[in-house]
Length: 158
Image (cartoon, rainbow, N blue to C red; front, side, top):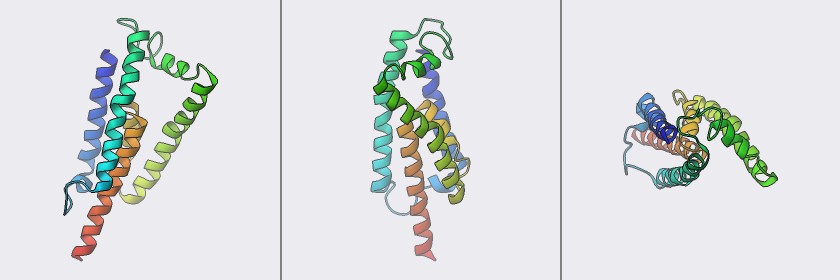
């Protein structure tokens, strides 16, 4: 269970780092603290964490050995990935998830984030390693929605 706690701490640290590195985006825009879109993205993203973590905790409880290696061996990342391909249905879902999380998420957030002026957009991918893929995408979408609100407010003032 130590590995789950470490993941939680690292997840919070990466999210805090994204916020700290992008103070202009995460400052409060005029109007409500969160738009409906931001709220929806955050709710979906935050809801994904306990759902995914429930299954991660079940995996660790069932497979990990006390004092075991979290990288390889029983209850490790490598076993987690291997079990994701245990049957054709799981393999299909795991392959789809892996392509989306390891290739599409970083490509999209880095290319789009750099175009939008988001500092260190690759950190959204890093956050997915410790939170969930759904949270990382929702966090990114909420970030660009917040940035849109700031830009809209600047246009209104001009």
